[in-house]
Amino acid sequence: MYYEFDEMPDTARVWVFQSTTHMEMEEMEMVSARLLGFLEGWQAHGHDLKASFQIFYERFIVVALDEASYQATGCSIDKLTHIILSMERDFKLSMLDRMQIAYREDGLIHTMPLAAFRNALENEELDGETIVFNNLIETKAELKNKWEVPVRNSWHRQLLPVA
Image (cartoon, rainbow, N blue to C red; front, side, top):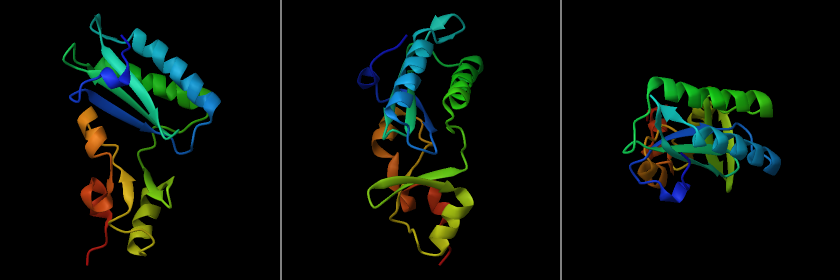
């Protein structure tokens, strides 16, 4: 069952799917329609799942699930992954490439491959204060507090050069 994103509790489990490019308005409308239809019928073992989504910065799809109603199962998570895969294919998006790092520079959001990001840190083109998107967050509360953080406060800190 679909619920408004703002109605989801801070304990809601989240999955972040990052597009390597900005989505155009038409793409966001098609993605939203597809996700809304999927979440309306999303179930685990015959139980409706209380879920929502929101698109942030024309680039990130965040799906939230209130597991207090019923927990996701391996099969239900696989179905979520399959809908994302189908949107990648149908809308020519790349949303499952976990080797792309998203960061802010000069107010804009960019992505670059992990190896290039590491090199940019080593070459001091980026540093520990660079704002990155920590897509490994697990809850809506973390989305609010730990998603957009400096490199030094994220798992990305392991990429910083050793002094």
